[in-house]
Amino acid sequence: MKAVSVFPGRRELRLVDCQEPRIETPTQVKVRMLDVGICGTDREICAFQYGTPPPGSDHLVIGHESLGQVIDVGSGVSRIKMGELVALRVRRPCMHPNCVTCRTGRQDFCYTGDFKERGIKEIHGFMTEFVVDEEPYMSRVPRELREVGVLVEPLAIAEKALLQVWEVQQRLPWACPPAPGKKPAHCHRAVVLGAGPVGLLGTMLFLENGFETFVYSRGPVTSQKALFVESVGAHYLCSETEPVEHLAERIGNIDLIYEATGASQISFELLEELGTNGVFVFTGVPGRKAPIKIDADLIMRNLVLKNQMIFGTVNAGLRAFEAAIRDLGIFMKRWPGAVRSLITGRFPIDAFRELLLGRLEGIKNVIVFDRETS
Image (cartoon, rainbow, N blue to C red; front, side, top):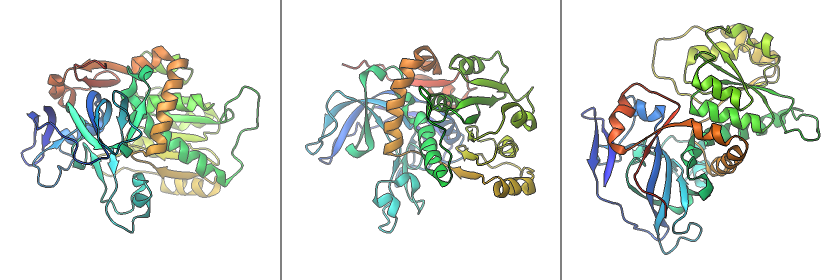
């Protein structure tokens, strides 16, 4: 079978022929890949910023945004059925017996850092024709989401963030007053930093939960992403014409900032505008660059006097994946055209080099394995 692989030792990106995997334990499931999304992480791995092959291998099969179809199951598999569509989670637990998070199925909060991640760290990914994995790491995707199911993994990032926001904000009376026909966050304002797939999916999630939502990004107000934002009922603000220091004045108290760019300078500038009792969520991982200047005194003063909270979030576990599948279905009923428009390019596997090394175009590009579900 064909697989897109990086060879860090030789700094090469190649399409290689690999042996088709087989089920080896009773709890494993064999999946035929249908769609695999391309994201910034894949491109950074292909630029050799990080990415670790499995022990004993000179290459790493990349890809971690997946939608596949089950074609075989082990004798001990009980939940996943033949023919079903599935999304596969990315992180696998470390083996340290004292890591309580990994031992309880929450490896997205691993204490040791010795976890593995499919397509990223020490275990092959999904940008290939067939994958075998353990049943517990798979979530069923309804057939009506076949067209957009590959968006589950990036949406799960926002889902995990929002789950933590609700839990963190139990520290104070943060809930909005009950109101007929209103969503839970109808009295709160959220700012999404960045209009990539993670940011736009987060925008829909916050809207669905009732936040008045603003997207702050570099593109002009006539751009495809800006038009998407307005089409779903959020507000688009162009960073080229809207100075960051004026945002709070324009928006009001900013209750939640969801960072989805990996750009540290603008992120910390925006942090200065976070409102009273607000939460700032970092999801991006910036590359190693020159140090940036921040107003540390102002940030620290705001954190203390305004009771603010900052946290970072990475990867996603079962609860976030299941929420993403549920909410993707809700989005398709509320904004079907908008959700479909997030996938702006579908390409055969032979186009991998331009997608991973060339200029990034569109919103979400997907490698499609030329097979139809039965």
